[in-house]
Each structure stands twice: as structure tokens, then as C-alpha cells.
Length: 156
Image (cartoon, rainbow, N blue to C red; front, side, top):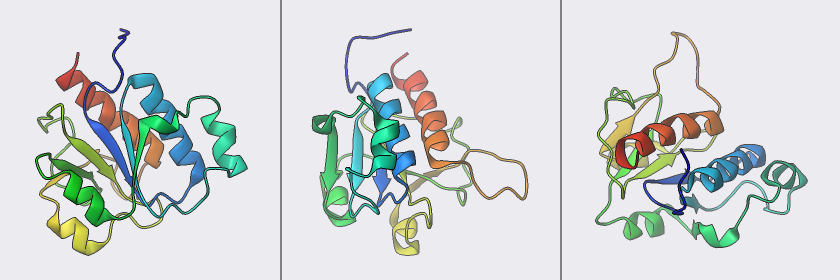
């Protein structure tokens, strides 16, 4: 199914991303699905990084990405919206969660996730079920899996 509207539903937010290839792949996913991307700085790389540019290709529209200088700025902008943290520490499976169009899906750093103090303050947490003793999926893969479900519930 295709649609003409851009930025039609839930958003993806990346907390201080540190692998340029993952961020670039998420930008491509957002561009193709009409999902707004938000990046909480600092990033662990420059947008001019060749590894980033190789994957993002011509999918990056800088005007479609909102940057926040800190988590506090991000949280302040979300006062009337839900922040949903994707984490392996959650108990709720992502397909059982009921999403809303103005939700923001937050993904932590590839190397660390989100700090414990943020983890404790975020009320909504979801996970992708995995085989026992596996650490985690790739960040770009996780974002694609979960955003697909949010769009299925809220748009299609």
C-alpha cells in the first residue's frame, strides 16, 4: 500500500546515536514510510561521515529531522505526548501495545541504551521478543519492526 501523505503518524527518536550506518538506515526507513525522525544529541558521529553518507544516499531530507540538544529539551517538547521506550528490559511485547498517532518511539544508543535514570522515568516500555540468551537486534532492524506495527495500528 502506498500513501501520499508525509509524516503521518508516530515518530522515531534516537537517543545519542553512535553508529552512523544504523542512523542512516533508520533515516531511509523513515523517508520511505513517512515517519518523522527525531535525534537527541550529541551524536557519536558527524553527518558528513562517509559511512553515514554511503547508506543514507539521497534519502536524507534534513528538514524532516528534528534535532534536540538534550533529553531535557526532547522531554519538554513531548509534554502532551507519550514517549515509548524500546528496550530489552521491558515486559510488554510491542504487538500487544496500543499505539496512538502522536506517540514517539524512543531507541537508545547502540552501545548502551538509555541511562538508568531515563529508563526509570519513562512510563511506557516495549520489547521485541527474542530467543533466550540473545542480547539484542540491530537498532535499525528493531526500529523497522516496531514502526511497522505502529503504522499498522494507527494508519492502515
